[in-house]
Image 1 (cartoon, rainbow, N blue to C red):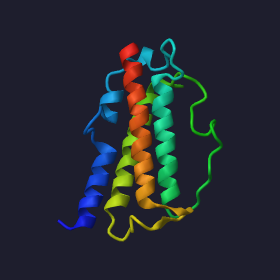
Image 2: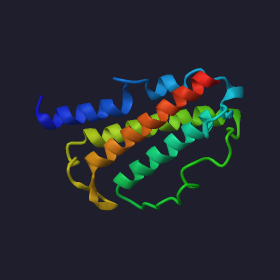
Image 3: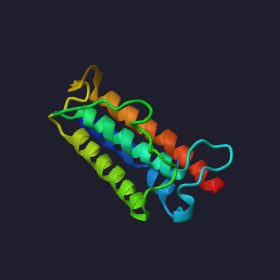
Length: 154
């Protein structure tokens, strides 16, 4: 396996797997619907807020890496849900599925040999595809850790 393929494979796994910590799928599994909108004492976010923030931010980074229009969201309101509770019972599952779909789309982007991982993304001349994948993975890992704390306290 050449180094480019190896790097692409490792980046893809970084987005999906939990090597040294809990992964996304474990963090969102089996949280009771009545607890998803609860902010544990002393913590600023509910499981729903963290899930939606992961979804929105990952989608934003993916759009930043793609050709086509990119609209920067306002901070912080553009990256967080407006309420601690999911608006519907189905919203939780839809958000989980959206995170997984966008992760898979990111993985397809990474696997594309025509994408120069060290090349600039379409919407950021100083930012590379490699940087954006690492930012997405790091961001998700941080908030997955927060989700695990919320789970334990619930």
